[in-house]
Image 1 (spheres, rainbow, N blue to C red):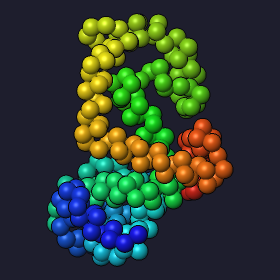
Image 2 (cartoon, one colour):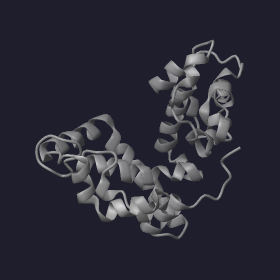
Image 3 (tube, helix red, strand yellow):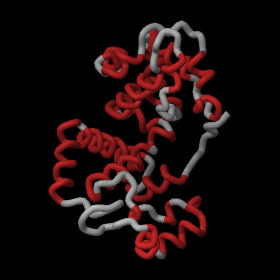
Length: 230
């Protein structure tokens, strides 16, 4: 791949997040994700600080960088004011830009997130939109969730939301003019390019696995073949 560390240094989050790691492990001790996942922000920070291209590439290909919740507890405790959470953001960004995210189970799941969340924002103006949140895809929602889906309009009327309604109110219909402004923001900030990049590499991976787009989406959304927790 080559020059991965150099590419990382172009990301302002990386420049702000890495000062000089002294390997004390305070970030790992305070990290909520490290309590449950096979995740150690100290090791990640030390790895990128080493500038070892092969090790950085392994991070970009692996599941580890996707465990972080970006809560930033790490930066509040680090004696050298490093921010492993910002470093993780930069690593995730580079992993998606280079297509290396498709090599890991958690990385591949970014395709499902990109389609669901970004399309909700662009089409409806909301990250989570009730009419696209389906019980079939989220059985953990339980029987109450299934009942809510079957009675969606009545439920939202009962709780006082303005689902798809005109005028003010929670979950109101976002005017087309505002949705067009959102699309311009996506275009100007690189979000549209990021979505296209994720789509490109994901479709290539689906073809490699002998799956259609729909089969691939279902696979990455429902399959967990690795043990990610401690």
